Length: 329
Image 1: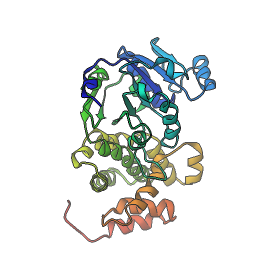
Image 2: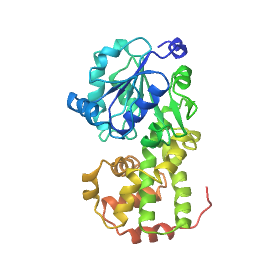
Image 3: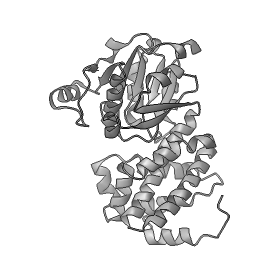
Image 4: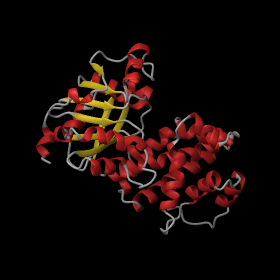
């Protein structure tokens, strides 16, 4: 794949998935003057958006086209964004496979890992679409704020340099940074959901700011240890897709709400009926993945015990605080 592609002007942008984040990204791209197509998964959803508005309740720029037939808009230097759940990623790639020869760059907007294979989204994309450059765009972004044009920063992670995309996606409100540690960026986006559940639990128990600060500090340490163990670079987790994303999710988002509501007495089963919570499944996946590795992960182990072994929270808190004293790092 030629690096010359990374120097050209972006032709058009296709965003597959019309949920909150796909909609927000479409609005941002259109505001940047890019020809943008928002692709719902079926015509019924597309018609509902046209007639009743989008999930964010924001006004869509006129240069956004809503159409399920994305293939009509493929052109040279077209960038495809995938904003679906990880569980639906293979289906999305199958739709794109027929047109692979016309594709160059495919960007994942997903946060999470495949339940069965533990693969990251770009690993799945690259396996199913081997001739494209699979990237991810990650960082601390709340969809509605992003769509409203409030200031934000994100990381575009690509193994092949794509400075043209970094420039095309940036504006006065959004600053795009570039990095080539795709694995680290995706692991950070998945791990932060786990630790955001934990901070939600602390907030639900009203344990105070001292406990919150102590937890976040140790959570960052643990998240970095796990990320490096699984192939990411340490510095990536100190950046937007790691530390930055954790801080945002620790204040708002499904993972925090899930932990908070659980601590207030609601069951995981009830909460999972209300919304998909990537962090809940990630607790199990990462715990199983790390079983055979000599890695100290007391927070992850504690969350696993609480949510998958029904251990009382107070017992896990006591276990954590009674561990042998040690140096900080």
